[in-house]
Image (cartoon, rainbow, N blue to C red; front, top):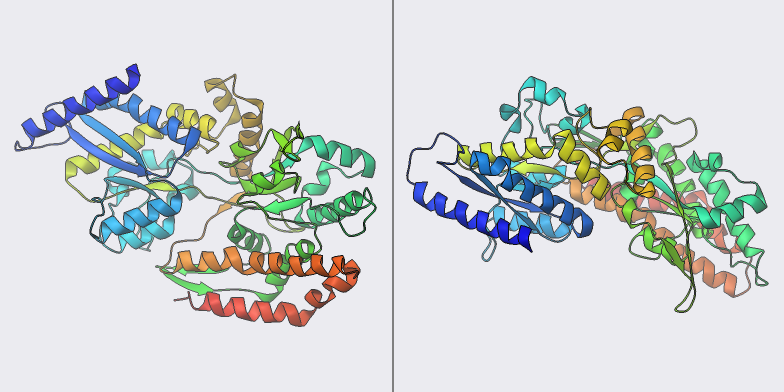
Length: 478
């Protein structure tokens, strides 16, 4: 309550100072010429609490000394934030004014930049300052060959493989499977088949085995899987996308997701795969390192029965013989055009937030990764918090190792990037869900697994889906 009251009084004081000095000549933020800036984010829960605490710390320290007051506002989820930013940029009736800073992925930042509203932050960073950040994080904000940077990286994430260790140990002991089997996608498929058969054998009814694996963010499966297999699906130059939806590569992706899915080896029932682990629907999944904090601590069997589980964090599997690519994700911050004082105040806050001490604090609280090279070191991270939860230490250890030892990839922004990603998110997963329901129905009517899935395993069936998806992606090209 005391911290909240102090924040309100500080904001009132800044507002009064702004009114008294608003007509004077300005040379930049200072206590004599204070500036108030607004930030829109999409954080929730512990992530929002951590971010707001750091904003408050800035306001009470550096901000107070330099005449900068930061007001943070969560807009809900990522989609809500994107909608609100676009509405503000278009000046829609009832929309708020465009904030000084907003969190955004590259496609949204690109769309707002085309409206002439985004600041080139490279002009406010020295070469030495730029060198301190992970190179690929800065590259994400470069939209054209002319250079410039339109996204300030503040916290990133990659993907990790999360496993219900408690139930895995029982399965592993009885079948001889090992964690090493989970290093490749082909290995995951094989293990998932064994898990289905193992659970099926434990009941009198045939064909009721359990799924082992699930996946969040299907677009990442396509994008990163293709890069591992030597193909970039969206080749972007100066905002124009050229599609490379290689049939052979896509067939490998099909064989290692769609096929095991319709056989019941993979599953996706809840909104997120962590929900499916919680209900015992699956044992493992690949998901964002920032979302790994939501991995459940128990499996709820029914209203009256549950049991505790432990977690293992492992690197996301790659395809056999594939290159070591991993996804780079997590929204950065976009600075919008305003007075020079507002822009400098915005940059001042973002520089402060991404200094190792603050950035590591946010990472430990949220599961995101620091953006400076120096901070991506578990020894340094543990020095800042030697008592962090073991689960968070495991997640960060795998994530930091991924950042330091894999090629990070995120597609460059292009005009219809959001639409193209939506196609990848749903085209295969929706079909797999629908066809799995048909397979289950057929098995319940007495068909064998082989007969129930045979229609869906033909080359003709794949070709039909491939051509349809190719057309949908081609519509996003150019």
